[in-house]
Image 1 (cartoon, rainbow, N blue to C red):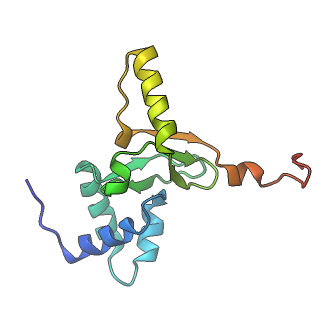
Image 2 (image 1 turned 30 degrees about the vertical axis):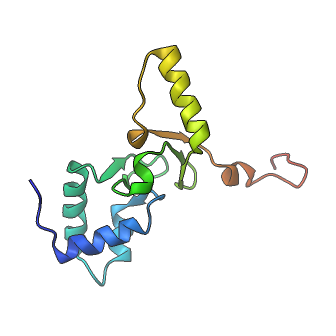
Length: 139
């Protein structure tokens, strides 16, 4: 059953589609859209979009508030995602690397991975390199 798309829902969807590879809290979204959409409408629409599978809600390791990632984008449906636990940035895994991982898991574990639903958590290169001196040793 299709839900009526309100002006507020459209504003929220447009915002999320511009932040596809990011994990964003409801509070961050509400602050960014404060002049266009009420905080309660942000939370209500996020809940609806989560139940529709358009966004994914995930715990945030550095804060108590959950974060959301927009999934209803063509670029994301067939990608494995890498999410940095330090900065929160989400990346698309290279297709060749993702396909190799999927094939290996299928062959060795007899398990089929759903690309669009899979997120691997770790630390991105930028965050790994922050705090290192010029000779590569952590300070």
